Image 1: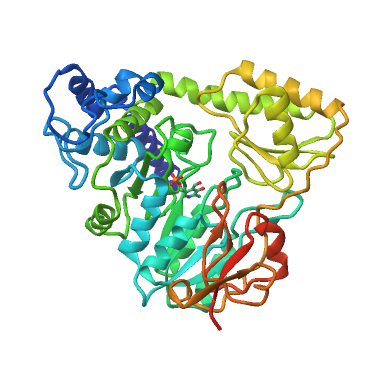
Image 2 (image 1 turned 135 degrees about the vertical axis):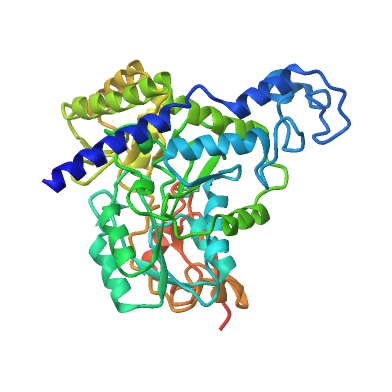
Amino acid sequence: MSNILDDKISFKSIKDNILDRFSHSNETPLLDAMMNYKKQPMTGFHIPGHNRGMGVNPKFMDLVGQNVLNIDTTDEFDNLGTLHPATGAIAKAQELAALAYGASKTFFVTGGSTIANLALAFALTSPTDEVLIGRNCHRSVLTGLIISGAKVNWVIPKKLKDWAIFGNIEAQEIENKLKNNRNIKLVWITNPTYEGVYSDIKKIAQICKQYKVALIVDEAHGCLWNFNSKLPTSALHLGADAVVHSLHKTGGAMTQASMLHLAKNSKFEAEKIEHALKLLHTTSPSLLLLSSLDAARANLTSALGQEMLNRAIENAQYFRKEAKNIEKLSVLSEVDFDVTKIFIKMKGLTGLQLEYILEQDYKIEVESASDEGLLILSNIGNTREEFEYLINSLKDISSKKYDVTQKNVKIMPLIDPEIVMNLREAYFAPKESIDKFEAIGRISSEVVALCPPGISILLPGEIIKKEHLPYLFTYEKLEVIKE
Ligand SMILES: Cc1ncc(COP(=O)(O)O)c(C=O)c1O
């Protein structure tokens, strides 16, 4: 009986919480401040020196237009506020973002989730700490840990070999690692993967709690999850302490605009993270990018944004249904996935070949291509007509025979790393640059990662093996530790 009552209470509180989170969708403090700024003619003697476009190359003016140059400014004016510390309209916009995401605190970041990850590592770890991170983490997590010097332990996600990508991280794997090493104080994983595969974060968070370990979830590719129940639940509501979102990737903000959130019961001190962000962030944050975060949050919680998001989900469902009728085409679906991220492959073509054909013959750009397949994003900015065109193009390609000469280039390393040195020690050790074929058996001293997806092929401290070579096709030389 009490359980039923508890359920009712929690359902009501969740509903109230969502209504509350969405109730400020028409408030856009920073966007409004920027509109006022744009309207007010001023005689300016300050940075940026182009002075609202007067000093730019006329071709550049043609390209981007007066509007953009009018608002290309940084956070040095009282009516707009400052980012570090957050004041004025910027502070208000961050508060509304925290409310919309259900976070205790949200920081706006103009250097992408890269800076958010660097700041988390810098603020929360030191050379005496041990952390557990997923082998498929973004290179910015590694860079952060090179800066901090923390000792890294690895958890290897499942390998989806038929697709040549990493899958989810098993909660049991995390538990095994924590059980065997009680010095680990932080677990840091990527969820979802770039291709949309997600892990059981609720279970992972429970395990972290049990072992009194903090949890960071790099949800760079999941910034829409908070806004539609058909998408997976954000780690912010499943027990993570901090979550990173690249709003510029799929949330409708401008390139480089991200958010770093602390969860309601986060173990982390906001001041520490704020301080690290201040030190690592540019001292001239672009107001254009910051206001795009305010706009994206307001949009996603508005009726219009909800419509866009529903459309993105319906388009993805439409694609997945139609794709079943296309000969030779397979869609990744045997795992837990975010419906809007569609990873496909076509028999007889590598992912890169299919990407090339789509681009050259059909003028279709996809998100990325990998060893086996390619990634299509069903975005809030896509229409049904675009998906119909994509489906028809894939049907057409599937019915043709291609004389393919392009090699199958490998970009996603599903190799178990043999790591023999601490990241930071290896990075700063005396090194030499040698031919990659000579480097087999030596210790790498650099992060080698192709973007996208930014997952490392080699890490500082990792033994270079012949299995790495197919992934290093753009490299002739590698940096290794001097013997
Ligand atoms: C999982 C993950 N985290 C962080 C980043 C860095 O994001 P940004 O490009 O916003 O700096 C990326 C970029 O692709 C990513 O895939």
